[in-house]
Structures are given as C-alpha cells and as structure tokens.
Image (cartoon, rainbow, N blue to C red; front, side):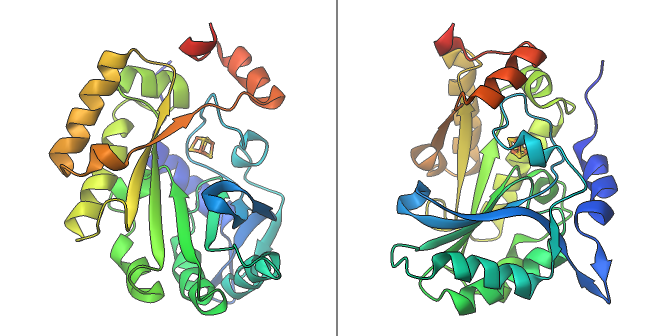
Length: 255
Ligand code: SF4
C-alpha cells in the first residue's frame, strides 16, 4: 500500500486538534509535565500528528485527533509556567508528543508568552518538520514573535532513505525530502545549527551506509550540521514494543 500524504493529513487534522474559538486558535493538549531531558524541562504534550511512526513513544495521543484539553495560547503558557514553578533548572520549555506545528497560529501566539513567563527558558519546538519543509509555516515568524535565541527547532528525521521512511512512518517516501527541506529552510532563514536548530536522527533501522549518505546530505545543507545531529535511539517501552511488533519493525541492534 502506498504511503499517505502527511501534508494533507495535517490539513485534515488541524480543525480537530487546533480548533478555533472566537478567532483564537486553540490546541488540544494531552498533559503538561516536568521531564529530565535537556537537563530538566517543562513539556506540553500535544495531541495529533501527521505521521504514524512505528516507534512512536507518544502514539496513544499522537495518533489521536480528539480528546485532551483544548487550550488558548495564554492558557498553555500558564500551564507550562506552573510546571516550572519551584524548579530553577527549568531552562527549557518544549512542545512535544504529537506535532506542534499543526496549529501554527496557536504556536505563534504561545511562543512570545512562554518567553515572557519563563524569561530564562528557551522554547523548544520538537517537530517532524513536514509542514516547515512544505512551506506551510514560516520559522522566522516564530523567531520574530519570541525573540532570537528564545526559540529552538528540533527536527526529528525519521529515516535515512525514502523506503525506510515509508515503512517506518506510514507516510509516502517522498516526504523524507520535506524533512530535509525543513533544515534547508531553517538554514536559509539565517538560523544557526546547534544554537537555533538541530536535526535529530532516528537510528537503529537502517545500515550504517544509509546513515552515512544521509549525513552527507545534511553536510550539503550546512557543513556544520553533521556535528550537531542528535542521535535518537528508539526507547522500547512496553507500549512501543507492542506497536513495533504489530507493524513488523524492530531495531537492528535489538535483533
Ligand atoms: S512524528 Fe513524532 S509524534 Fe508523530 S508519530 Fe512520529 S514519533 Fe510520534
């Protein structure tokens, strides 16, 4: 079966996971929490994603389009700030879980509020980059609203080849190019690898040669990129193991 179009899926999901109320775009959130990544951070997990990764740790809400709590940008910012209260190590506030760029108008309103309420924190957008790469959203809009140095894009590249991308995400293999195009757009916007954005790379499903070729493609986008790639090994929680077994994929290093 051919993979689906993740840009079209995002279009279909947006009114469900980011409904409008009185001219304000809300976003459905599954939860807010403190987590140890980045040396300690507050996280908002959003509902809904336009990929269907076989290794998704968040699939129980990333695959959903309804449920959670729809919040206005100022409500979400307050929830993040509340999680950070009493935690001086909260130098990062992030949106993760599903795909935060679905509901861009919400994100654009949220980022400056987070910058104001958490003046010592960087706002990290953990994204699959599909909508950035498709030119549906403008990263500079977010930077302009929050301030340079206050927003960081972490683009999770799901595979090194279109074939593996399709097998692992369910989306059409050509969409891997959109993920790479997202990195190009961030570079074209004058943002700096490592300071303003970085690629993360899901590892474990492809041979090292395929990964090496992908790193060459990253180098062609910006020679500094390979040095800042964050390896993203799959975390095999029981619910992730169930999903991977159902989809017939398994990391090579666990075989
Ligand atoms: S892009 Fe992220 S949230 Fe979406 S399905 Fe893949 S791993 Fe899950």
